[in-house]
Image (cartoon, rainbow, N blue to C red; front, side, top):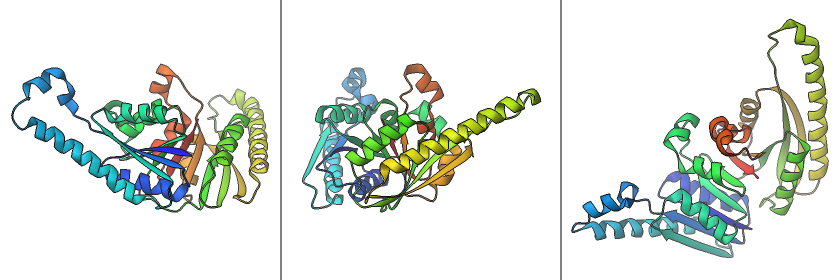
Length: 285
Protein backbone atom coordinates (compact mmCIF):
# COMPACT_ATOMS: atom_id res chain seq x y z
CA UNK A 1 0.00 0.00 0.00
CA UNK A 2 1.39 3.38 -1.01
CA UNK A 3 0.26 6.48 0.91
CA UNK A 4 0.98 10.12 0.08
CA UNK A 5 0.79 12.48 3.06
CA UNK A 6 0.68 16.24 2.59
CA UNK A 7 2.75 17.85 5.35
CA UNK A 8 3.81 21.22 6.72
CA UNK A 9 4.81 22.54 10.15
CA UNK A 10 1.30 22.33 11.63
CA UNK A 11 0.22 20.03 14.45
CA UNK A 12 -2.53 18.80 12.11
CA UNK A 13 0.04 17.58 9.60
CA UNK A 14 2.02 15.77 12.28
CA UNK A 15 -1.21 14.14 13.50
CA UNK A 16 -1.98 12.94 9.95
CA UNK A 17 1.43 11.27 9.67
CA UNK A 18 1.05 9.59 13.06
CA UNK A 19 -2.48 8.46 12.20
CA UNK A 20 -1.26 6.76 9.03
CA UNK A 21 1.19 4.74 11.13
CA UNK A 22 -1.51 3.78 13.61
CA UNK A 23 -4.09 2.86 10.99
CA UNK A 24 -2.12 0.92 8.35
CA UNK A 25 1.04 -1.06 7.63
CA UNK A 26 2.00 0.75 4.41
CA UNK A 27 4.71 -0.52 2.11
CA UNK A 28 5.60 2.99 0.99
CA UNK A 29 4.89 6.42 2.49
CA UNK A 30 5.61 9.55 0.48
CA UNK A 31 5.78 12.77 2.51
CA UNK A 32 5.04 15.77 0.28
CA UNK A 33 5.64 19.42 1.13
CA UNK A 34 5.00 22.23 -1.33
CA UNK A 35 6.81 25.49 -0.59
CA UNK A 36 4.10 28.06 -1.21
CA UNK A 37 5.52 31.44 -2.17
CA UNK A 38 2.10 33.06 -2.32
CA UNK A 39 2.20 36.36 -4.22
CA UNK A 40 5.95 35.93 -4.70
CA UNK A 41 5.19 33.25 -7.31
CA UNK A 42 3.96 36.02 -9.59
CA UNK A 43 6.80 36.95 -11.99
CA UNK A 44 6.02 40.66 -11.61
CA UNK A 45 6.06 40.57 -7.81
CA UNK A 46 9.09 38.28 -7.71
CA UNK A 47 10.98 40.65 -9.99
CA UNK A 48 10.08 43.64 -7.85
CA UNK A 49 11.44 42.02 -4.68
CA UNK A 50 14.50 40.44 -6.30
CA UNK A 51 16.75 42.38 -3.97
CA UNK A 52 19.63 41.43 -1.74
CA UNK A 53 18.49 38.80 0.75
CA UNK A 54 15.68 37.37 -1.41
CA UNK A 55 17.67 34.26 -2.34
CA UNK A 56 18.47 33.68 1.31
CA UNK A 57 14.79 34.03 2.17
CA UNK A 58 13.85 31.51 -0.52
CA UNK A 59 16.49 29.04 0.65
CA UNK A 60 15.23 29.40 4.22
CA UNK A 61 11.74 28.37 3.09
CA UNK A 62 13.12 25.35 1.28
CA UNK A 63 15.26 24.37 4.28
CA UNK A 64 12.21 24.68 6.58
CA UNK A 65 10.26 22.43 4.23
CA UNK A 66 12.96 19.78 4.33
CA UNK A 67 13.03 20.00 8.13
CA UNK A 68 9.24 19.52 8.23
CA UNK A 69 9.30 16.35 6.14
CA UNK A 70 12.23 14.97 8.13
CA UNK A 71 10.36 15.56 11.38
CA UNK A 72 7.36 13.76 9.87
CA UNK A 73 9.59 10.88 8.81
CA UNK A 74 10.53 10.36 12.45
CA UNK A 75 6.83 10.04 13.40
CA UNK A 76 6.30 6.95 11.25
CA UNK A 77 6.89 3.44 12.60
CA UNK A 78 10.52 2.35 12.24
CA UNK A 79 9.42 -0.84 10.46
CA UNK A 80 7.88 1.08 7.53
CA UNK A 81 9.68 -0.47 4.50
CA UNK A 82 9.96 2.70 2.43
CA UNK A 83 9.67 6.38 3.37
CA UNK A 84 10.26 8.97 0.67
CA UNK A 85 10.17 12.74 0.88
CA UNK A 86 9.38 15.42 -1.70
CA UNK A 87 9.93 19.13 -1.12
CA UNK A 88 9.70 21.64 -3.95
CA UNK A 89 8.62 25.20 -4.67
CA UNK A 90 5.08 24.48 -5.82
CA UNK A 91 1.52 25.19 -4.78
CA UNK A 92 0.85 22.59 -2.05
CA UNK A 93 -2.49 21.33 -3.43
CA UNK A 94 -1.25 20.83 -6.98
CA UNK A 95 2.02 19.30 -5.76
CA UNK A 96 0.23 16.77 -3.53
CA UNK A 97 -2.21 15.76 -6.26
CA UNK A 98 0.48 15.56 -8.94
CA UNK A 99 2.76 13.56 -6.64
CA UNK A 100 -0.04 11.13 -5.80
CA UNK A 101 -0.65 10.57 -9.51
CA UNK A 102 3.07 10.20 -10.27
CA UNK A 103 3.73 7.55 -7.61
CA UNK A 104 0.35 5.82 -8.17
CA UNK A 105 -0.76 6.33 -4.58
CA UNK A 106 -3.52 4.19 -3.09
CA UNK A 107 -4.39 6.87 -0.54
CA UNK A 108 -3.84 10.56 0.19
CA UNK A 109 -3.80 11.61 3.85
CA UNK A 110 -4.15 15.16 5.13
CA UNK A 111 -4.64 16.90 8.43
CA UNK A 112 -7.22 19.66 8.58
CA UNK A 113 -7.41 22.95 10.41
CA UNK A 114 -11.17 22.30 10.64
CA UNK A 115 -12.41 25.54 9.10
CA UNK A 116 -16.15 25.87 8.58
CA UNK A 117 -17.44 24.42 5.34
CA UNK A 118 -18.46 27.83 3.97
CA UNK A 119 -15.11 29.48 4.67
CA UNK A 120 -13.26 26.57 3.07
CA UNK A 121 -15.31 26.81 -0.12
CA UNK A 122 -14.52 30.48 -0.58
CA UNK A 123 -11.17 30.98 1.12
CA UNK A 124 -9.97 27.56 0.09
CA UNK A 125 -7.99 25.20 2.29
CA UNK A 126 -5.56 22.59 1.06
CA UNK A 127 -7.53 19.73 2.65
CA UNK A 128 -10.78 20.93 1.04
CA UNK A 129 -9.16 21.20 -2.39
CA UNK A 130 -7.56 17.78 -2.04
CA UNK A 131 -10.92 16.31 -1.08
CA UNK A 132 -12.59 18.01 -4.03
CA UNK A 133 -10.09 17.05 -6.72
CA UNK A 134 -8.43 13.80 -5.61
CA UNK A 135 -9.12 10.72 -7.70
CA UNK A 136 -8.02 8.23 -5.04
CA UNK A 137 -9.37 7.61 -1.53
CA UNK A 138 -8.64 10.44 0.89
CA UNK A 139 -8.11 10.32 4.65
CA UNK A 140 -8.88 13.60 6.42
CA UNK A 141 -7.44 13.47 9.94
CA UNK A 142 -9.09 15.57 12.65
CA UNK A 143 -7.61 16.24 16.04
CA UNK A 144 -4.82 14.19 17.55
CA UNK A 145 -3.79 10.80 16.20
CA UNK A 146 -5.25 7.86 18.08
CA UNK A 147 -5.55 4.08 17.77
CA UNK A 148 -8.56 3.02 15.72
CA UNK A 149 -10.72 0.38 17.38
CA UNK A 150 -14.26 1.47 16.37
CA UNK A 151 -15.12 2.32 12.76
CA UNK A 152 -18.41 3.73 11.48
CA UNK A 153 -19.10 2.68 7.89
CA UNK A 154 -21.87 4.72 6.27
CA UNK A 155 -23.59 3.07 3.29
CA UNK A 156 -26.45 4.17 1.08
CA UNK A 157 -26.62 1.59 -1.68
CA UNK A 158 -25.22 -1.74 -2.83
CA UNK A 159 -22.73 0.26 -4.89
CA UNK A 160 -21.35 1.61 -1.60
CA UNK A 161 -21.16 -1.92 -0.24
CA UNK A 162 -19.10 -3.13 -3.18
CA UNK A 163 -16.74 -0.13 -3.19
CA UNK A 164 -16.15 -0.05 0.56
CA UNK A 165 -15.80 -3.83 0.87
CA UNK A 166 -13.21 -3.82 -1.91
CA UNK A 167 -11.22 -1.07 -0.19
CA UNK A 168 -11.37 -2.51 3.33
CA UNK A 169 -10.32 -5.98 2.23
CA UNK A 170 -7.63 -4.82 -0.21
CA UNK A 171 -6.15 -2.34 2.29
CA UNK A 172 -6.69 -3.90 5.73
CA UNK A 173 -6.31 -1.91 8.90
CA UNK A 174 -3.30 -2.52 11.09
CA UNK A 175 -5.41 -4.10 13.83
CA UNK A 176 -8.84 -5.77 13.98
CA UNK A 177 -11.68 -3.28 14.43
CA UNK A 178 -15.33 -3.20 15.41
CA UNK A 179 -17.34 -1.88 12.44
CA UNK A 180 -20.78 -0.33 12.76
CA UNK A 181 -22.55 -0.34 9.39
CA UNK A 182 -24.99 2.57 9.25
CA UNK A 183 -27.57 3.51 6.65
CA UNK A 184 -29.64 6.68 7.05
CA UNK A 185 -33.10 7.03 5.53
CA UNK A 186 -33.69 10.74 4.78
CA UNK A 187 -36.70 12.16 6.64
CA UNK A 188 -39.31 14.19 4.74
CA UNK A 189 -41.43 16.97 6.16
CA UNK A 190 -45.17 16.35 5.70
CA UNK A 191 -45.99 19.69 4.12
CA UNK A 192 -49.11 18.45 2.30
CA UNK A 193 -51.36 16.10 4.26
CA UNK A 194 -52.66 14.56 1.01
CA UNK A 195 -49.17 13.17 0.37
CA UNK A 196 -48.91 11.46 3.74
CA UNK A 197 -49.93 7.99 2.54
CA UNK A 198 -47.46 8.08 -0.35
CA UNK A 199 -44.66 9.35 1.83
CA UNK A 200 -45.33 6.72 4.47
CA UNK A 201 -45.14 4.00 1.83
CA UNK A 202 -41.89 5.48 0.47
CA UNK A 203 -40.38 5.69 3.95
CA UNK A 204 -41.26 2.08 4.77
CA UNK A 205 -39.81 0.83 1.49
CA UNK A 206 -36.65 2.93 1.99
CA UNK A 207 -36.23 1.53 5.49
CA UNK A 208 -36.55 -2.05 4.24
CA UNK A 209 -33.99 -1.31 1.52
CA UNK A 210 -31.60 0.22 4.07
CA UNK A 211 -31.92 -2.80 6.34
CA UNK A 212 -31.17 -5.11 3.44
CA UNK A 213 -28.12 -3.07 2.45
CA UNK A 214 -26.57 -3.04 5.95
CA UNK A 215 -27.28 -6.76 6.42
CA UNK A 216 -25.71 -7.61 3.06
CA UNK A 217 -22.70 -5.44 3.90
CA UNK A 218 -22.32 -7.16 7.28
CA UNK A 219 -22.23 -10.55 5.59
CA UNK A 220 -19.54 -9.50 3.12
CA UNK A 221 -17.32 -8.16 5.93
CA UNK A 222 -17.62 -11.20 8.16
CA UNK A 223 -14.14 -12.35 9.10
CA UNK A 224 -11.37 -12.22 11.71
CA UNK A 225 -10.49 -8.57 11.03
CA UNK A 226 -13.97 -7.16 11.66
CA UNK A 227 -16.55 -7.41 14.42
CA UNK A 228 -19.68 -6.17 12.71
CA UNK A 229 -22.91 -4.56 13.92
CA UNK A 230 -25.64 -2.80 11.91
CA UNK A 231 -27.78 0.28 12.37
CA UNK A 232 -30.55 2.01 10.40
CA UNK A 233 -31.58 5.55 11.33
CA UNK A 234 -34.01 8.13 9.95
CA UNK A 235 -32.98 11.79 9.68
CA UNK A 236 -30.56 14.08 7.93
CA UNK A 237 -27.81 11.82 6.51
CA UNK A 238 -24.92 14.18 7.22
CA UNK A 239 -25.95 15.12 10.76
CA UNK A 240 -26.90 11.56 11.67
CA UNK A 241 -23.61 10.07 10.48
CA UNK A 242 -21.66 12.77 12.32
CA UNK A 243 -23.65 12.28 15.54
CA UNK A 244 -23.15 8.50 15.51
CA UNK A 245 -19.52 9.02 14.48
CA UNK A 246 -18.79 10.86 17.74
CA UNK A 247 -18.55 7.50 19.50
CA UNK A 248 -16.20 6.04 16.86
CA UNK A 249 -12.53 6.54 15.99
CA UNK A 250 -13.01 6.76 12.21
CA UNK A 251 -15.85 7.32 9.74
CA UNK A 252 -15.63 5.54 6.39
CA UNK A 253 -17.88 6.78 3.60
CA UNK A 254 -18.08 6.37 -0.17
CA UNK A 255 -18.03 9.25 -2.62
CA UNK A 256 -20.52 9.25 -5.46
CA UNK A 257 -18.28 11.45 -7.57
CA UNK A 258 -20.37 14.58 -8.09
CA UNK A 259 -18.87 16.47 -11.02
CA UNK A 260 -17.93 20.02 -12.00
CA UNK A 261 -20.27 22.87 -10.95
CA UNK A 262 -22.74 20.64 -9.11
CA UNK A 263 -19.93 19.27 -6.97
CA UNK A 264 -18.61 22.75 -6.15
CA UNK A 265 -21.95 24.40 -5.39
CA UNK A 266 -23.89 21.54 -3.84
CA UNK A 267 -21.17 19.36 -2.43
CA UNK A 268 -22.15 15.83 -1.43
CA UNK A 269 -23.00 13.79 1.63
CA UNK A 270 -19.38 12.66 1.93
CA UNK A 271 -18.09 16.25 1.79
CA UNK A 272 -20.71 17.35 4.31
CA UNK A 273 -19.62 14.60 6.69
CA UNK A 274 -15.96 15.59 6.37
CA UNK A 275 -16.70 19.19 7.30
CA UNK A 276 -19.15 18.51 10.14
CA UNK A 277 -17.63 15.46 11.78
CA UNK A 278 -15.47 15.65 14.88
CA UNK A 279 -13.92 12.32 13.88
CA UNK A 280 -11.39 11.58 11.15
CA UNK A 281 -13.02 10.60 7.86
CA UNK A 282 -11.89 8.23 5.12
CA UNK A 283 -13.57 8.99 1.78
CA UNK A 284 -13.37 5.98 -0.56
CA UNK A 285 -13.75 6.70 -4.28
